[in-house]
Amino acid sequence: SAVISQKPSRDICQRGTSLTIQCQVDSQVTMMFWYRQQPGQSLTLIATANQGSEATYESGFVIDKFPISRPNLTFSTLTVSNMSPEDSSIYLCSVGAGGGLNEQFFGPGTRLTVL
Amino acid sequence: QKEVEQDPGPLSVPEGAIVSLNCTYSNSAFQYFMWYRQYSRKGPELLMYTYSSGNKEDGRFTAQVDKSSKYISLFIRDSQPSDSATYLCAMTNTGFQKLVFGTGTRLLVSP
Image (cartoon, each protein chain N blue to C red):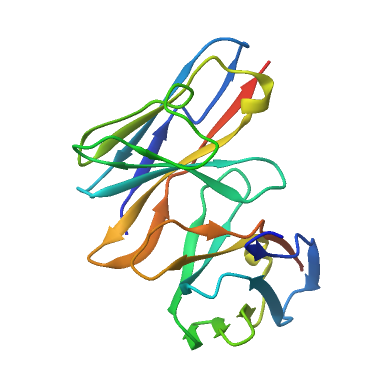
């Protein structure tokens, strides 16, 4: 399985500001995913990020609010823009196993609190 | 109705007990089923991965899938305090990597 790191591990931000979360993988992967995990709720997919193409967003998530970059096969960023307290959550990136397999491996997460 | 239902617990058991964790789902197109373990303040860790119906065993862990009932289970034998975590089920369609998760069941194993 891939080793995935995320920065920052946690942050406390003010309403109206933006935060960019970084996800680094120790091997080249085609598919990377960004999830949100709110207290007491399921992990919810925000978007799928493939290198060389625009990210694909799930219903309820828009690019203006959650812009994503995928500059190469080992790195991606998720920005949470114009934050409100409702954006307080854990944000996780994951990578697909590839080779036609459907396993996904997750990073440690970024715990975001918006005041 | 949620696509995947999972009892949030907490489920409290004594050390050495057999633990049964379950999920039900509504989408008959799901073919791949996964169990993740998530310790507090950590990312989910993939425990078991199964395709279609049947059983899969890995050490103290056994995953069962009953597609006819749309019901999956994870059994933990000889449970240990280190098994205390939240267990998340996840599933996806054939050839499509969007995972749909349950809310997770919190398990507490007391020494």
